[in-house]
Length: 411
Ligand SMILES: *Cc1c(COP(=O)(O)O)cnc(C)c1O
Image (cartoon, rainbow, N blue to C red; front, side, top):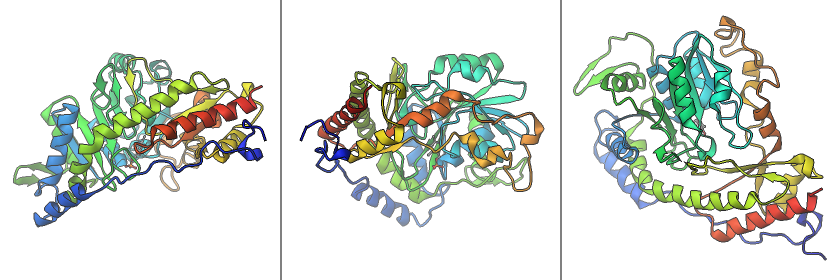
């Protein structure tokens, strides 16, 4: 039997050993949790854990102010609220992202407007964003997908030109750098998630950085995560000027977060090394497109996603995915099943049941084909799990597997 026969056709598998795994939580987290309980309060404003967590986060990010939230979705909503996004505003964002990116926009009764993506970085570009700017545009919500930084300089210039706020969705981009600067510190606000699937986990949770360094801006964001209660030391004012949700983080999440932050550097460094190796190798394989990382970018790879050049291959994306899986390389055909605007919510323009508000405030087009690059990415992408516990050998075998399948189907 030929060695290069595909496993799916009865040939030998490329990968025969299990992928590296490891424990994300240990006695460090347990110790912090115990201390949190011993405080006899789990309320963030009375305890020390959330405060310490944010303090440690601020040190890593060299930022003066940040606010804790109950999730990444909540963090994004807080940033939108602090940015002043309100009824009838438009927020330009990415059609390939987690649902959480658009939830806060809609809860502010603002309208998500989707701009197209670069075909190989899978990120928004200043050019595509500019095409969507209208008189109602209030903010740009960029997503650094999978830890890959957006090209921020032109985006910040554009924001300046049109007086727009910039919110960075960093849920997938811990310690990602752009021209030496950490993503989440470049725009007006940076939003992070500590849900259980991100680089670090507190079960659920979120963080918002307030990059203006302005105290009033910080208090606005802080209150927006806490029913708009104005807490200053021991005093609290509950005289509400406008609506805000309760997105408070508990001391239990803060405690776990303190221990998790200590692991962040090695998690991201390891993922960067593994991902870059994979990416460099894929640049040389015919039939596949590697990820485009900005030349002055540093990617912390939440996952690894490449696309297929289907006109160079004699297979479909699904056949490629199945053949690769048969080689012992688990993968998903695509990322989210379809672009965000293809969801019924946008097709029916129904954010709230039996209502078209706020979509009926303007002429919004969510028809198929409106972001062709984004749609094409999701139709040709193969996504690989990538994990800090993977060994060098795991990555080596992933490369061999991709090379084997691509060579077999090469036209
Ligand atoms: C995970 C994620 C979110 C939402 O975070 P949650 O903590 O799950 O609410 C938002 N945006 C992106 C890009 C994400 O990956």
